[in-house]
Length: 52
Image (cartoon, rainbow, N blue to C red; front, side, top):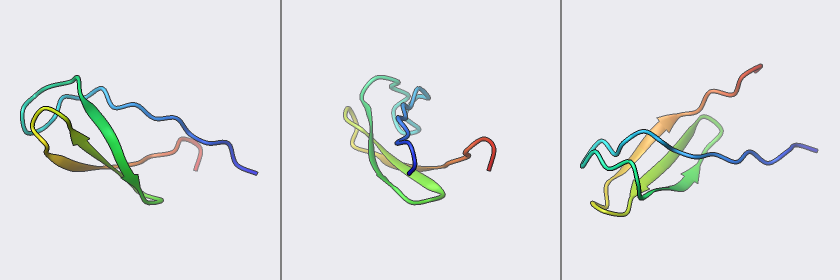
């Protein structure tokens, strides 16, 4: 059984540079998609899991 991973995003939005208001949208095994509440931009980041 695997342990759920809690993730936060602290980098600023690439569209409006707001650090507050980013929220997780969806994940694949290799990426997370985030969105920005202030400007509505969605972006994808590559997930690196330490030890794998």
